[in-house]
Structure formats: C-alpha cells, structure tokens
Image (cartoon, rainbow, N blue to C red; front, side):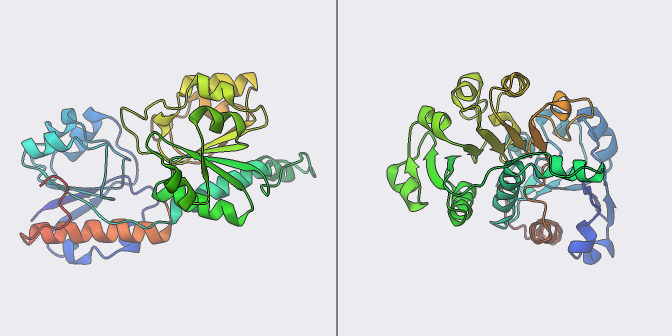
Length: 317
C-alpha cells in the first residue's frame, strides 16, 4: 500500500473534480487543505509518504526538503514545468517527477478581469456600496488605450487576443521578441523603455528565470506614466517588490493589480496587503474548474500509471 499526499488543496476540490477512488481502494490518500509551511514543517508532515501530488508552485520542493524525505518516490505535479522542484536533487534520490497538461484560457481571462476591475475601480466601489455610499470614483474605458504586453508567448498572446476585442492598441517587448512574433498577435514590437513609457496598462507574461527575476524594477516603474498601472498574473519575483511598494506609496503610478507574489501564501502582515492603489487576488490565475479538473485528474492518472510500472509524462527521466 502506498501513502499518497495531496498538497495545498485550498478549496478541498481535488476529489470532487477528479476520480481518486481507484487509488483510495488500495492505497492511503491524505488531503492537506492548508499550506504546510517551510522545509522543516513539510519534512515533518510528509515523512511517511511515498507519493506527493502538488499543484504548481504552491509548495516548493528544494534540495533541502527532498533530502529529508527518505520515503518519497514520486512527485506528481500540475503542469509540465515547475520551477519550485529541484529536478536534479529529485533525480539523484531516485524520485520520479511526472507532470500534467493544462488549459490555455484561465490565466489570460483573469488578467483581463483584473485590468477591467482596476480600470473601473470595482473593488473599491463594491466596498463603498456595502457601506451605504453611491458612486465614488470615475474609471476609464479600455477602448483606444495602449496595452504593453511583456512577453507574447502562450499567455501573453491570449491576453493580446482578448485585449483586441476591447479595442486596445497593443505593443510588446521581451528579450527575444521579433517583429514577426509581435505582429502575429496584432502588436507592435517596441523597446522595453518605450513600452513602459507609453503603455496605459503593462501586463507581464514571462517565465521566471535568472534572466527575468526583477525585470521590472525602479527604472521601469519610473518610466511609467502616473496614470498607468501594472498587472502581474505570471510570477511575483518578476517585479522588484521593494521598488513597487515605493512607487505605490509615492503615487508615481496609478497602481498595480497583482495575482502572484514573492512569498505565497502572502503573509498576513505583508506590506502589499495595506499598500495603496492595489487590487490583490490570491494566485487565482489557473484556479478554474476546467484547469483543476485537468491538474488533479492527470495527477491521479500519473500516480496510477507509476504504481502500475508504466509512468507517463515524466519530467526528469
């Protein structure tokens, strides 16, 4: 009998949205609905388990943790890329890592939801309505405004497609972007400086790496118009958090709509929670029924195949 842990199932939906019954008949499946914490807390809680099923980067598996889990033999992760797992350490310890496919629309739709909500001050107006008030702000329309897309890959391209439906003008930049790639999505490639200087809304869609960490810092924020705002549904460390907080408190930009953070879950006392000119969501980008059905369903499938001796979607083979 294998002991299987499902981690960070915040809404307790893993077994509702996918079929784990075939595993539960012969193996022990334990669901953790709360984040376990750091390396020591995870090591203590997960010590008995042979298999862990994880949802994206909600819990990191660095070498320090992997080396403490003597019983661990399989990590089933949502997605075909998870930078929070030390793949080399897992391979050295003989721990297989298997992934899942994904769905293309969830994060891009949330990006547009954040842009719309920030543009029309919806969160603030909702609070004011519940306090008994009526019409406190004047928002902006998106039609004719310029959206600066940093990264025009799968997610950035999806956002560009949706933004065109609102009549937005599109400009794009990334370190490897070509004129042809930008044109494919109806955008004009510009320099990084021009994008931050001219965009009414900046949205980030890059993979986190050594090259992109902190790619938006004080110099880029200083270029932005005081009426412009930035949206991040990609990875928190793309933005220099200290520089963003300084820009928000100084009123140098209109604000920020943020779904991803340097530390997740975001600590209760984190300064972003009380920062002005912000719209915050708790990493909801991929959190939709459709996406979680794929993630949890294929995680269960990966585990079943591994137990049968025929692993699928192996990421560190």
